[in-house]
Length: 334
Ligand code: NAD
Ligand code: TDX
Image (cartoon, rainbow, N blue to C red; front, side, top):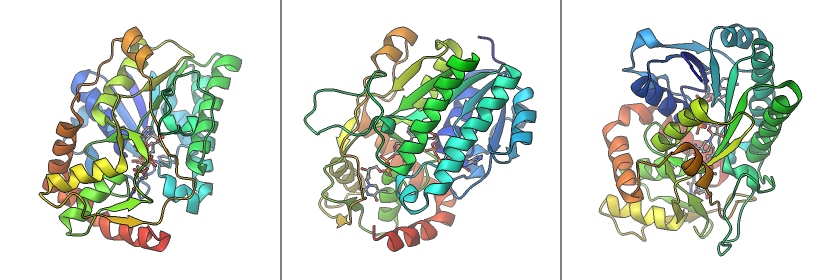
């Protein structure tokens, strides 16, 4: 479909900022960002972009009046705003239910009212976890089985989107992506936490025994897949996004330590996350075959090395929030 102006919710967060950058670089579209600027946002992630084609509105996706006004002005909505961190959802689930469920509901009502295209950005965590030796990967037919307040709230929002498609004819798609890494990711998340710890001379922290497996994809590859789905995806469809990047947490920590020229065993084992999902793995065959998407970051170690350099070269971006993040982890015993 022909999309000229999009509303990107959560555009000052990690996935949103990478998506906005991709869209402004690859298309002529205008972008309005709606972001509440929570602790997770960094408006600096949107600097250096063409101001004539992008504007940032600071506001809440649960604000019905504001959302209604902004949705009326655009052709499509790409919904990235969320409370996104599992550890925080264990401490304060309310914010997750409010933003992820009520916020998505508020957006759906607005796109229904104005008949706008909607793309909902979600996670593979809605499917729960897999055994380490399970040959099966998640597909769009896997049953939902979320484990944490975060993934349960995302699962709830996915169900709302599907119901609004079926009951009200809303023109929506859903994507469920695996773990992202890359520039502009908050230092609370696994990879940037370890990189910035090492910059500070602090050993990386591994939950439990570090055997948990995540399926890593570069955020720029995720952004390219989102744009492809927005333009060419089939209404009502769910697309899984992943780049066959399964690695254990321990392997990743060893790679990061090696990138810093340190002993790969020089990490600290810390208290495990309660309910910690063991393994995620995504089968993205339909996205590749039907929409012709392929990841550009074929080699994870290259993408990781680039990410390490980005945090080394952009300390002013993450330094202001590092101390408070580690204080929060100390309180959580992790
Ligand atoms: P993030 O925490 O980095 O960013 C979230 C953004 O949403 C922030 O800018 C924040 O200010 C904004 N926000 C939060 N509550 C809001 C509200 N009520 N109103 C308006 N803005 C609000 O998260 P992220 O990693 O960029 O994740 C974005 C989306 O991508 C989420 O839906 C997440 O489920 C999904 N996703 C993320 C990953 C990943 O690895 N990061 C993987 C798969 C899917
Ligand atoms: O210090 C750490 N040590 C550690 O071992 C941290 C912060 C994490 N971990 C482990 C927990 C996970 O097994 O690393 C893995 C990745 O942790 P997170 O970065 O917190 O990601 P995860 O919980 O897997 O969820 C992420 O991917 C899916 C995003 O935060 C979600 O928003 C997305 O939906």
